[in-house]
Length: 129
Length: 288
Image 1 (spheres, one colour):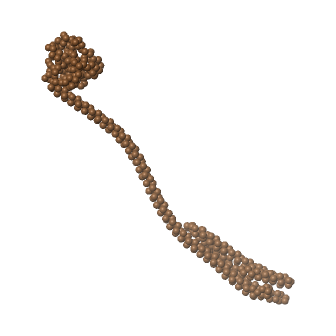
Image 2 (cartoon, rainbow over the protein chains, first blue to last red):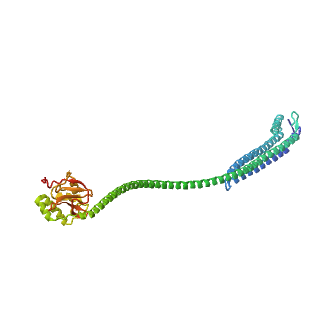
Image 3 (cartoon, rainbow over the protein chains, first blue to last red):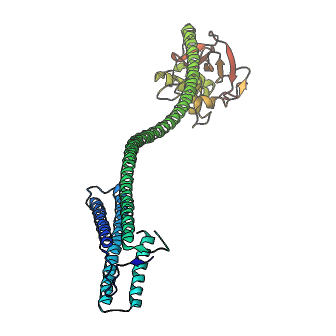
């Protein structure tokens, strides 16, 4: 897979990843919000069990369930963190691209950068998450 | 994803957007499933615990009821045990009392046997007394009968007997002296109370030194030897129990003298009584 950037013989233009970045940001925000909601739900359950007037067997079960829910929220935070990390990498590559193009870098360096971007996008699509 | 052909950035953007949408949907679905599953699990657990709690309360109620019943049973058992121990104590007391009463019954039985024996003895004594009474009645009857056989004698006859034999005179004098003292008939055989007929004869012979003193006069009389025919001074025994001295008055008429139920009396030799024996006194051994 090759990324086909709009070419200009003198100054090749850096590829625009804004739609991809928007999609990743949207997904990241969605994951973080969902994680926050689940975390709040787990914390609510924990508070409910901690301040229950009459502790019982149900309180113990509820604590376990709250723990599982909280762990699930951590996984969502992790997924959101990866999205924002990818956004950072893409921005860095784009800045590099612009830097190489402006400093009349060699074709070989641009091709290498192009290959890295392609690899990252391919891996991202391959993992699915 | 197209491989082996060159993809435009627009294609990549579309694929990434599609993949992200799918990822979001899957993640939301998984999160919802986890949260919903947790909620369902909690609800199920809650209902299950409620049900178990209800059963537990039911069982606890039954257990409390069983405990209450058990406590009541234990109290009843304790009361029964207390009553049993009381009954055992009472039984022991009753057994001890029964044993005591059995001992008393045995003692009373022994006393009763003794009293029966005593009663038998008393009955025998009564029979003996009755027989003696009959004998005395017979003697009294005989006495009433023999008053007409009285033989008058006095000290002159004694003086005459002195002439014959001083021991015979002393014998009659002693008898007349005792007659003058109004000696009465009595079974005591003592001088201050009175004598029976054999007792009087024995006493007179003891006074004259012919029988040993210091023993009952009627028993002492049994030491005398028996004889077939009487001599002067001998004792003639009659069926009425009389033991009378055989003597003769100054006219030479024989008579007998001694204690009778009417007192000391002298009678004709042939007064109405059958002789049963003669006792040899040896006061007048030189007659023959």
